[in-house]
Image 1 (cartoon, rainbow, N blue to C red):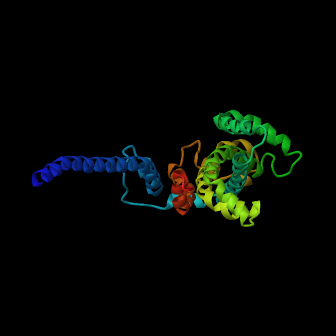
Image 2 (cartoon, rainbow, N blue to C red; image 1 turned 45 degrees about the horizontal axis):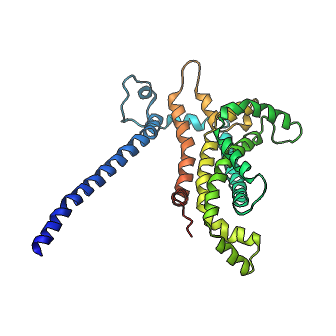
Image 3 (tube, rainbow, N blue to C red; image 1 turned 30 degrees about the vertical axis):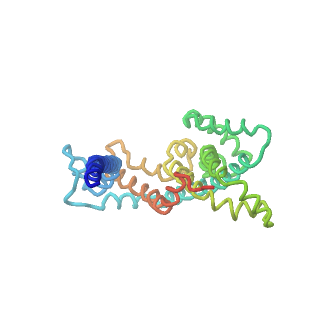
Length: 297
């Protein structure tokens, strides 16, 4: 018995060692990947804190002995910078709220109900994600220009010209993702709610909505990031009304003919990154469960 046990122990020993080495290798690879991903952020913040002489030096160093906030002072000293920041918050917040609400209702409709052209509609959602944004910018420009003559607030040079296109581009992905969450909710739960006297609206908002909320958070993160970092639409649709520009447009102030202000560019980029990080930290728990599929039968 002892010999057998010893053989078992000897047989299991190398396997455990290999398992431990594999785990250590995986952890080391994860740390290396995290370092590679975080390095551009580190360099951005470092460049924003460096004095101008170190930023323009031909021998860059991954540290600074004389950190300075002059670049941030130049950023916040720019005229209308606060207005651009608020415009970005308004556009991104509106896109996140409206796209999440419409996507939830649309995903529920295409999952729970049977109607004509349902499959065609889902295929159209999928095809819409394959079209490059750049290919639609010019048609959208003329569409918004003509629509502004009939519907105030959505034409060129308005925040509506940024909100509507981003909602349209966020919806296909959000509907496809939420469709899986709605499908994962068992129909027996819905039938039980109806037997208990719940109306369709009550089931929708009091039972189904909390169950698919992690999926809503996951789609909202992607909608927020894509809208917050948008430069193409902001540059194309805000032609002359600079008071309606968003934060990415503020970066253009630091690109000058006589030389780019790289410290100001990095400082402004750091300020732009902070809201995204805050938003991500606030929803990270829901985001993890949303990406992993938290709804179970």
